[in-house]
Image (cartoon, rainbow, N blue to C red):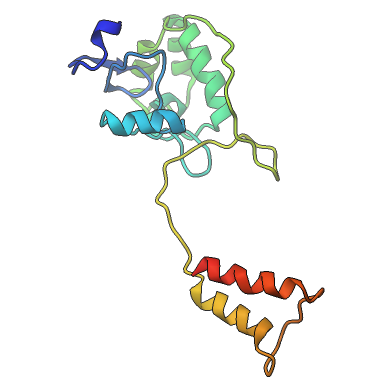
Length: 187
């Protein structure tokens, strides 16, 4: 593979769960929307950033028609099972699904991912966990926003430092100097 590094390869792979063409990367795995390091690689190589999650952690239409609106952990199990299962079982499940008319491509999607499961391997990774709920944090690309605190910082500084109109007393007194420094960092 090393002879291909740095070359502009015009190869694409069709990902069964996405039904779209994706550039082949000479790496074991790359997911620019889900990993900070892969994000940088994706930007450098102008990869398409495909998000498969809704804001509430369910699978969107990019994650495969058979898995839309599934919670992420249920979808992981369902996708693994779909990759392991055979066409006959999928066809029977499709026939028994009352929503089959709503998702006519469900069967085709499921059939195209049959037999692709090759096994599992342990993969050590850093995993973000919410400090409040202990839920796994799914990284998502979102627009960055900031809050302009200059006005409120000046007001808070005056509420502590203005001897004539003091609204807040800082105790012990030595921390008033620290308070005075803090808003200046925000400006």
